[in-house]
Image (cartoon, rainbow, N blue to C red):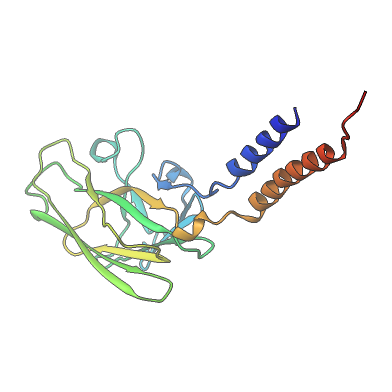
Length: 215
């Protein structure tokens, strides 16, 4: 019985040691509450350096018939040809960039230029900046297709920015991954681990106090 208790406590302590911070997808499905300025979702903030002077919005929802998200919301910049968007955690902690979906705004291939190019800059804790470009063809068939921008091996970053180099496009589903340091358990997790170890120690002490009986 005591051996079973010890094993259960050990397994519990091991289980709670898993990281608490999971991957996050900013899908803009709560965009109906957005009133202007920076957009907040799931502990992250997306801000623009230029917002519409009338509405105060940096982002507009794309019309459902043209959205790359058939079940939710995709967004585009509200105004300003040179608008740059910045993504970072609200608490300023590090994270990793996973991917971001882009699409054109119109099903008419001649409405805008034949390609879209987005310019990315990614900054780590040492203020080292990495520059990336993502380009996709505009003349894809209808319905509008989502193109996935992803960059491998970037490591932990504090923020990243992006802006379009050509014509306006829509974007959605920004996947953000845990930072490498997120594997270290948080204080609450440490407390649960210590409790588990305490159960193990208590069981061992009780076992030591039991003396064998001799006939």
